[in-house]
Image 1: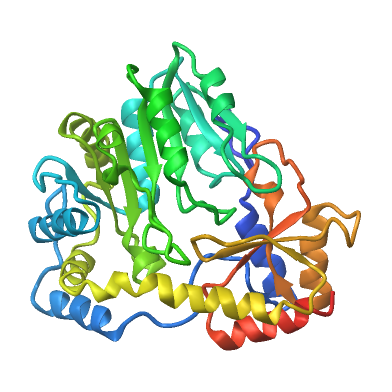
Image 2: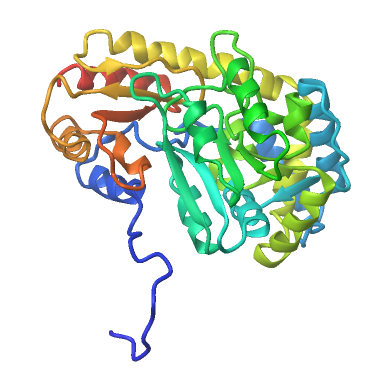
Length: 384
């Protein structure tokens, strides 16, 4: 039925996400899912038991708006142990209803009409739309072709008096690259003596491979004082459907973020907060994550050795980029659709992570899957 009301879209160029499109096509052809960054294996039974225990204990009503004190204190202690950074659990740690909400609350709180926000493409698809919804301008800087590294000279040239925020994401979805010490040095330099806020998406902070260091903003004092760090329990504990994340930021920034958070969800799910507080008491729950996913990365790469795809290094996250430009003149969307129809394997075309649909001839594979799925998915891809 057509509505009798006229409406004017705030995002007229935004349609259904590629994840929904690929998901629908994959379901139609009963394709193996190497597209979505959601595990197809169970989470730790301990976590389920602790959430159920919290429910049975009566923790089923609203949690405090800023998050359970026990969980915020556990987060502050974990960050201090891992990165040597001290965050006040009362005024600098906020539990939110997913990292996605943390991103929205942060951008909404700190970015104003007329501001500019620099981000790097390919990028997680929510950054630019959230910026635009604030009446601000999203300034996309393309990562270098080939190695997908940041060109910091280009960043420096893009900074203007209107630049309010720079969004960084490491480990990076979708390219599986990470920021290194040289990147951090340049980021410090380009933001020195400015009021630029850094929004650091670190949801894959515990998934860094080959002994590399996670250069999060908390590790570097000059960046910590101007950064909002957003992270996710869902990625760390294989429970993406539980929708609990957190923001770490200096108290002045945190106060503004909480003003928005309280009118969005008010509080994250209470039983899950209790469960995550219990889980954080055991550091092995996150310290083992890199090794866990490195095994899966190596398994997929090994099994794809006979494929004609060009695999790029995966330094972190649970993603792997595969090039096909030497095999086909199809667009990446067409190639991904053909893989679903003919090989019954679902992947994501990299163009979905560019605002203008830039096609670089790559698809993204997810190895957040059980070993049997990875082995069978690789077998089918070797037939391409």
